[in-house]
Length: 225
Image 1 (tube, one colour):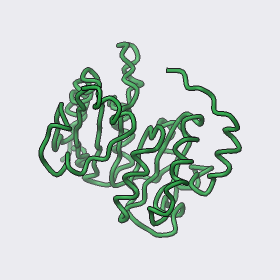
Image 2 (cartoon, helix red, strand yellow):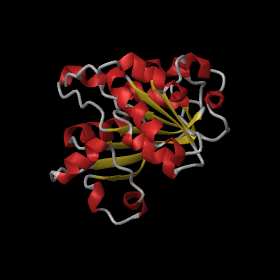
Image 3 (spheres, rainbow, N blue to C red):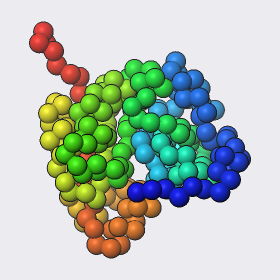
């Protein structure tokens, strides 16, 4: 879907620059340098308009959250949302405008505790499978970034993408801790503590089921193990 260009986008980003990591490569030694306090690092890939990032960072004052968005005209809204809710958080939210394929250039190995992927582009054409953020190629990137036993938390309304992702998780040797094809119908702590994205709120109101999986990255076995 084509994103409408934001008026005065550069100026608006500059006005919220205190939340923006302008040079993500500055994190390569220690991501905590972006924050005033050292806490476990969580990463959202594809944060969209920022409702999840703002909600999570407000609810979880024990973490530092970095939210990544590839499209600057979308990131504008996320940054402005963070600025409007600044007093709800303990300086634990930052943003990167960048592409997930460059993550190994931004973060040191095994420095992230949890990765969130919410409603990413399903890239429905078979020839585009490698572009899906849950393709095994990206999973290997996440494996290098996550701490041992780190977690990937995934949500989508696209059942085809969810089925594909579950197959990729298994093929990559990951441990699927929990999954569902109807998150909002679940009666457990995961559903209770779920923080909805703006997209999720709109589509669930229209009757779409939300699929979700929690996947743990255990140590990869080698032939000598």
